[in-house]
Image (cartoon, rainbow, N blue to C red):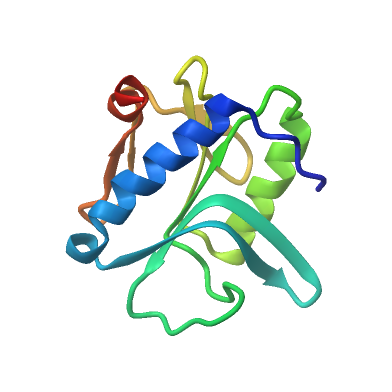
Length: 142
């Protein structure tokens, strides 16, 4: 899937999210990675805007284990069909949560195998962890 060209809004949200997550990485026992290759199949690689993986996973070079979550930030020329393909691939690989965030409207969506659902309160949560990412709060601080 060809990547679209990110905008300033995309970059600011990616920086804000990364900073928020990085600040909490030790408490949540995670590694926060941006624009990092994920090997989802033998010869298939994807790049997530932001990936969160368990800190105890030993990794070098390329992510080869399913992340806890992947956050994709929309750019104006993103196509929903392409986003859905990428999200389904990540879910099939074993990623627990895949979210898409619109940096302009603040709308958030969680991807499932067969559909997307809006995140009503704008807080991205990783089940069975303390991880909670308040998108609206982060957007308002930019």
